[in-house]
Amino acid sequence: MDGLLGIGDFSARCGLSAKMLRSYAAAGLLVPAAVDRASGYRYYSTGQLHQAGVIALLRQAGIAVKDIAEFYDNPDPVRLDRWDREVTRDSTTRRQALVQARAALALGHVPPQIPAESSRIGSEMAPDFLAGVATHTGGRDTNQDATIVAHRLFGVADGLGQRGEIASRLALDTLEAAFAADRSISGLLIAGQQANQAVWQQAGTAGEDAQMGTTLTAIAITSDVGLVVLHIGDSRLYRWRRGRADQLTSDHSVVGDLLRSGELSEDDFRTHPHRQILTRALGVGPAADIDYAGVSCEPGDRLMLCTDGLFQAIAADDLKAILAAENAPQQSADQLVTTALERGAEDNITAMILDA
Ligand code: MG
Image 1: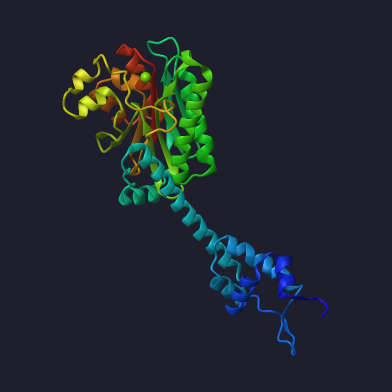
Image 2: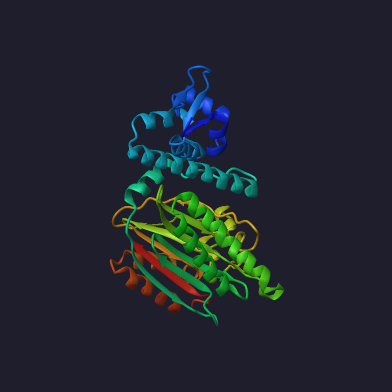
C-alpha cells in the first residue's frame, strides 16, 4: 500500500510507541487512516506523521490526551495561549515551592508565605516610582555602599570587609541581571540567592585577606505579586505614610536583636560598641537567609531605603522632618545625607527615596 505505514513502521518514524498510538486511537486521536479489509490490520498515512510530531510535543508539554483530541476537533490557536499560561503558572508555583523548600532546609523552619492581602495590594498598585539617590563616603576612606535604580528594581547594599565595595556592587548587579530574566516572585528569590552565590564565590577566589560580604535591601515590582522587599543585614526600608514613618525591615544585627528583646533603648542603640556586628549578610556562606515580604504602597506614600550610616547619624525626629517636607525625591535624599554629615556620620551614608 503506497503512502501507508503499518503501526510498527509508523511508530519507528514518529517516535511514539505502538502502545501509545493504540491508546490515542482509542481516545479518538490520530486514528489510523486505513484498515485492510481482509486482515483487519490498521495503517497510518505518511501525512499523519506531522500530526504525530505535534502530539508528541504537546504531550511533552504535559497536555492531556483528551485535551489534545478536543484541540484537533476544533483547532483554535487561542487554546495554545491558554495552555501557555497554565504551564507558566504551574512552573512558577513549582519553582516557588522549590525555593521555599531550599530556604526551609537552610533555616530549619518553613519561612512564612507572603501574606495574600499585601500581595493583592502590591499587584494592584504596581507603582511607577520617582526615585532620588544620594550617597557619601562620610567618615571613611572609601565608599563601600552601592545603589541600583533599574527597571522595576531599586536597592541599596553596604559592603563589609576590606573589599566590601566589590561585594556590594557585585550583589546589586547580579540581582538586577537575574531578576531581569524572571520578574516573578520566584525569579526574585532565586536572584537573591544568585547574588549571594556571586559574592560568596568572589570572596572564595579573592583569598583569605579579602573576606567580603554585603547587606542588601531591595524593592522589586514583581510580575505576579506586585511590590516585594528583599532584605538581609542592617540596611533598612522605611515607609512614610500620612505623617508616620514605619520601619518595614528588621536589622539582622546584634544590636537589632537587643533592641527587639527590649534590652537596649533607641538612644543607646546608635552608640553601642557592637553596632557593627551583623547576624546575617550576603556572601558569607553558600546560601543566605534573605527576608522577603509583600509591601503595600499607596499613591502619596514615600519609601526610603538607607544604609546604617544614615540612621546611626540621624535621630528619628530629624528623619521624620525631612521625609515630611514635600520636596522632590532627589532633594530629600540629598538633605538626608547632608544632615547625616552635619551630625558627624562616621560611616558611609546612603539614602534612596521612592515616591509612589
Ligand atoms: Mg555601613
